[in-house]
Amino acid sequence: MNNASSALKVAAGIFLTIALITIVVILFISAQEATKTAQNNFSDIQTELSQASFTVYDGTSISGSQVTNALRKFYDKDQFGILVKTGKNKGGQWYGNTLFIDDVVTDDRFGSVDDNKNKTGDLRNTTLESSNEYVNPSGKFKASIVRDKSNVVRGLIFVQ
Image 1 (cartoon, rainbow, N blue to C red):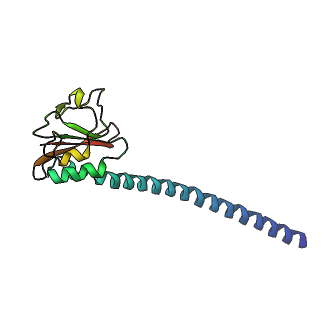
Image 2 (image 1 turned 180 degrees about the vertical axis):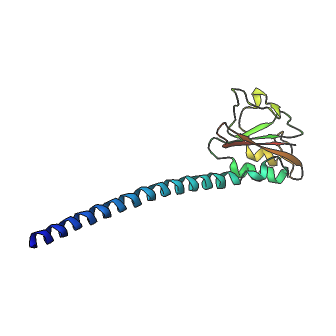
Image 3 (image 1 turned 90 degrees about the vertical axis):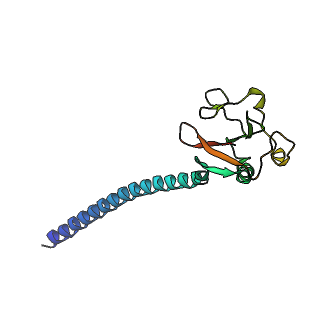
């Protein structure tokens, strides 16, 4: 009888151990899936927040002072370019990086940019009235966003 009792205790212990291990494995797998989902959601939110600073420029009319503020804000941004077309400079001037769309400096909505205008502009010239790059602070500009094939904002275009 002693042996049977001991055998039952050992069998119950083994059964409980196996049940505990199974429960831990199931919890670990479901926690792993929840973590992956949370990471994907966090990544989406992070992308939305990083793109939110550009929504103010999506098909809106803004003043020249807002254009110069955008130039200062985004001028040094990696892989980013800003095209400003004014009444004086109809061909436009790139600031930061020149964007090449289909190997041509162009934007389908606004026509192409002259090859001699491919050089990046100097922000100081946007405040000099004698310069072709001058941006009138009270002027009105149509703003638009340039996105790449991955839907990442790569540039801004301002047309007076």
